[in-house]
Length: 204
Image (cartoon, rainbow, N blue to C red):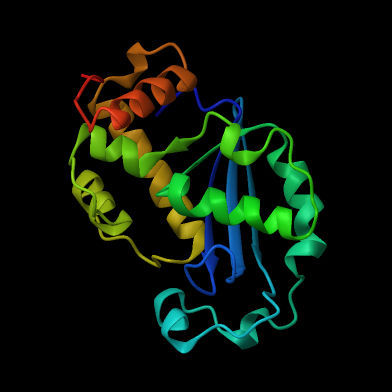
């Protein structure tokens, strides 16, 4: 288990679709590591638009489930208070979750400082590709199965995906001796440099 998760939040979102500009968040889950304390935050969110049937088939969040929930603009400041100035970690979060979340704040004029994209964030999918499998297409379920030997139950529900991402990170941390680095920031800096170099295994 990593002992350097200080000031980091693992998170995941589920949405009405893939387009950052036109689609909306329907679920957000976050697990915050604050020293030895762990805090969880998980909500269904009313997107104020219909969730397509083909999307419901993926995450199983129905329109009836969200119709009486708060909207993002109603929850936005609570989310900001929870995130504070923490770095964020997720699965494929650099390409999807972080841009989606930042765009949701921007849509309602909610100022985030520092902006989410400018923080030293950790995309666990990229770290997994750096250390285990340098291919572009690898799912959370396959990575979880490979490292834990277990099937991921309840995939595509936000809190389950967050917990799976943490499990993957902890397995990578132990398996690849990442405790030799002084901090999570050092790991992030090295793997992001390696990503730009087309995944040479400089973390070894």
